[in-house]
Image 1 (cartoon, rainbow, N blue to C red):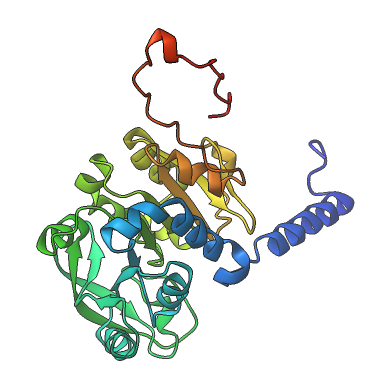
Image 2: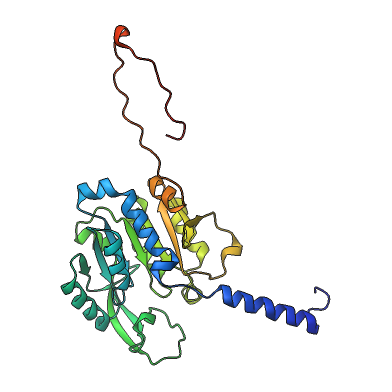
Length: 293
């Protein structure tokens, strides 16, 4: 194969491998079957007592489109509040109508990016889920619009939001830009988990997987691909730069309970607080704690 790369049999073998890769690259975007819904259920289970005290999880849906993921999140995380961000005004209007029908949805009047201001957006009226800050070449009618954008840190400050349980980003290539807008919150560990889409749009924006790892890993986040029944947490390798999505998840090191659940294991059992030692006369036999605890 090395010495005869253009031989007919080698070309046939190469085409067969490319065809197999194309099949493997077919992505499942349905939260009920691709693992996204499971991530939400694990989040609700791991943070149950905390959410009961604080009034429910806070979720950010960046690139919310018409709100399908937000509805899934509300069903999977009872009592949650979902802050929805959408770049294009006509789509935001649809979100406002959804918010009027379903409690728990808050619609921001802007998209998110690495700085606040106005940005040029490529909008596909017939396929609004493809709208992006980048000129991704889809075969559909499009128009360019000027739309407002915010930094995530600015939004958190303006609305008095201390922590975010899950920051979900699906922005057709702008995932790295959005994350840079949350740098202060990420440094402080105030975002428990980040879900981001990863695909061919990353080529145009430069949001390569190694850059996302390079941003998140030093801040204490463990990254893995979302699978239907687990999250495959692992260190980055160059071989991973294949644009096989659709979604990855990063979890802060402080949420070991969540990481354990997502990996397919059981959450760690809390160790009860040490009690004062009884007097010698009342002392009872010591029982060793479970090693796993």
